[in-house]
Length: 343
Image 1 (tube, rainbow, N blue to C red):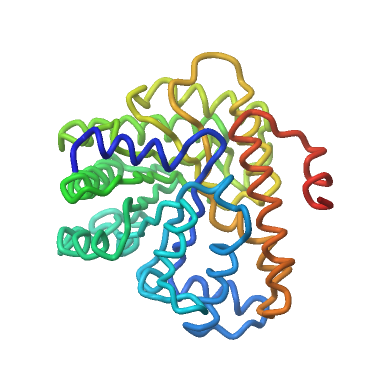
Image 2 (image 1 turned 180 degrees about the vertical axis):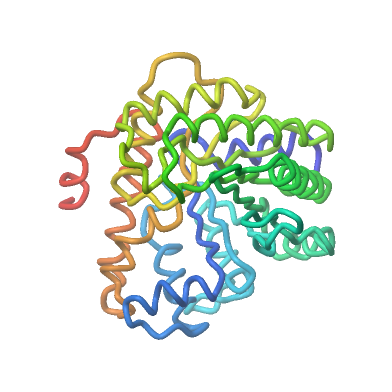
């Protein structure tokens, strides 16, 4: 695929007001979430859960892409249609998570590096043949005493860049996800410092690996104080710090930034995104969302593993996606919560 075609695909995923549904939890992770609600986790249960989101009427108005997991991209819907085809038929671009998870980083206690480069080229070829048009790779960075180390930041930046280059070689748009975790008691100022350092390392590595910035998407964390910090920053402070960090470290050639929710609840993730898009000043990229739990939690609670609750679960999902879409356009108001929920 040409650089122009990759750029067209990247822009199509995040057109105005649309974001990405991160439905890429591994079976183990999703099992834990279902078990918390005493829902038995089987391949069929997980398929039914995913299908509830993918078949929500009108959801393509707010969702431009869905990140699948290896199990899901191989599954068929209740009507026998491959789930990846189900999405494509609705005008939603299918994508795939391709990393093998974060593992302990040798020589650096407490830090992790994401693995999965071995054999990645062949896996990308297979996923593209199955219908995927973009991919995702997540790196995690922990803030702590003396952390992150330069070795951890650089190792993860290199992995993200190598992955991105392989994706573009195979005609897939890479979503590059360097996540500075909310775990810890660090301040928002420390979060901004580390996030800027990580983003700079990532884009330096992308440049070294000849990755086309126009044909990728960035999925970063917002700049937020650690969850155990005594003083939590206001929504406005988060928005200002996040946009300032992006302006300093993310080239304008990147077509869109799709934030991860990173452990924020659905309301706070929506409010932060809305505030970021309402901050004045230049924004050369579209600023949208690629949420997992922040898009799904309300629907999961309503669905509760029961087929008769699927319409209510879909209504909850539609409501949240509509609010997040408004936030991506800078039009979100808290009043929309009750308006959308009762519609």
